[in-house]
Structures are given as structure tokens and as C-alpha cells.
Length: 149
Image (cartoon, rainbow, N blue to C red; front, side):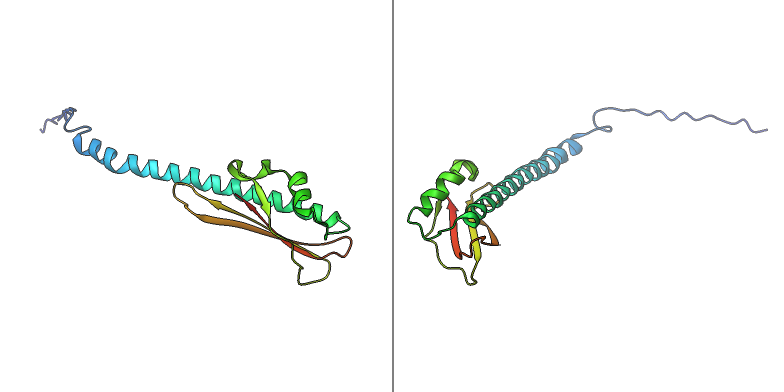
């Protein structure tokens, strides 16, 4: 009869067969730079999202102030907005300045536009802007643009 032979597979793990130079070089040349690129891209994208959120918050506060004003033709409107809103909301420590107010196309409409230029690692010189359109409580119409610089 047949005697069943038991073959033992001898597995010999050494540096060359187990985890060799090819795998190390692939990890150093492909995996790690790809990981670094993805992480820095996500951080830059996150900062753009945070700056966009701040611009929306500024636009909301400016429109709230302008909606409640009875006389939008005041000479110190730029100063009023700068003091009531404050520059601490602008991204990266920039300050806000407003353009000269213009008439909105519709009576009672308040249009606020806030702009900021992002200079990140991957998204360079990208202008972020947000626009908010509301209606005045006192039938005033105005269009104003603020820029965080």
C-alpha cells in the first residue's frame, strides 16, 4: 500500500523574500508622496471652506445691519458697518473695507457682496465671494461690496 508522505513546506522568510527592497522603494516613492499630497490638499480645502463660512457670516451680519437702518444715505455708513461688524471675522487677520454704496435694481432690496482672495498652497489667487439679497424693513435699496484684504 501507499504510504502517504507528508511533505512539509519549509517557508523560509528572509529579508529578500518577505519584505524586500522593491516594496520599500514602492512605499517610499509612491505611497508616502501620494499620502502627503492628499493630506495637504485636504488641509488647504478645509481652510477654503472655513474662509467661505466666515464670508457668509459677514454677509449675513452686514445685511442685518443694513436692513434695520432707516437712512442708508448717511455719510458714515462705511464706518458704521466697519465698527458694528468688526474686522475680526475676516479670514487670516485681514480687515474689511466697503465700497461706495449704490442703488439696488429693485426698491426695498439690499444686496451685500463680500469678497476675499485665498492664497493657499494648492488654491492660489482664488477669489471667494458670497452675495446675499434681502429686503429692507424701511423700503431702502442699496447694493454694497465689502472686501477682506
